[in-house]
Length: 163
Ligand SMILES: [Zn+2]
Image (tube, rainbow, N blue to C red; front, side, top):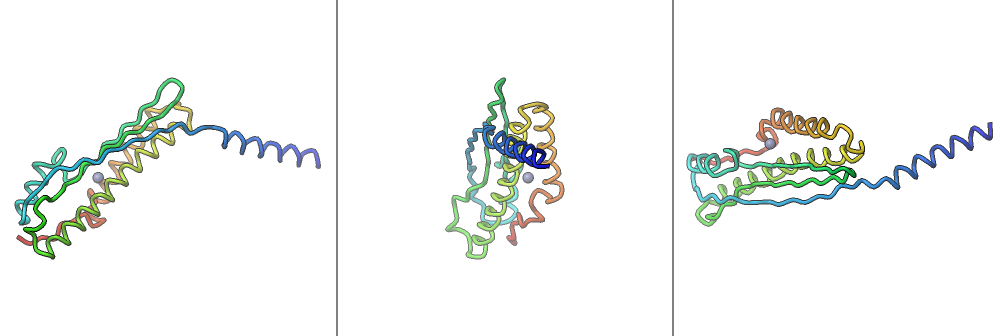
C-alpha cells in the first residue's frame, strides 16, 4: 500500500512538473483602429456606421492565429471601432447614449478577441495537433456568439437616438 501511495504521489508530481514546465508558447499582439463618424441624427449615423464601418458593421474584430513547426503560436487581433469627431454637436443625452453604445460595442469585440485567444491557447495546449480544426472551432464560436447576442444588440449595443 505504501508503495502504491508513493507511486501515485510520484505520478501526480510528475504531471504537475510536466504541466508547469510545458511552455504555452503563445505570443500576442493587437491593434485597435478607429474610423471617424460625425453624424448628429439617427438616420445619418446608421448610414455612416454601415458605409464607413468595417465590412458594413459598426465594429469588427479580426483575429488570426499562426503557428510554426515548433508549435510557436501567435495571435494577432485587429479591432475596429467608430470614433465620433463631432461630440460637441450632440446633446447630452445623445452623447451619453453614444458613449454607452461604443463602450458596449468595444466589450462585444473584446469577447470576439477572447475566442481568438482561446483558439491560440487550445492550439498550443494540443501541441499544434489539429490546429486548423481548433481554429475553425473557435471561429464557429464567434459566429454563434453573434447569432445569440444578435451582434451585441442583446448585450446593449444599441444606439438610443431619436431623429
Ligand atoms: Zn460580433
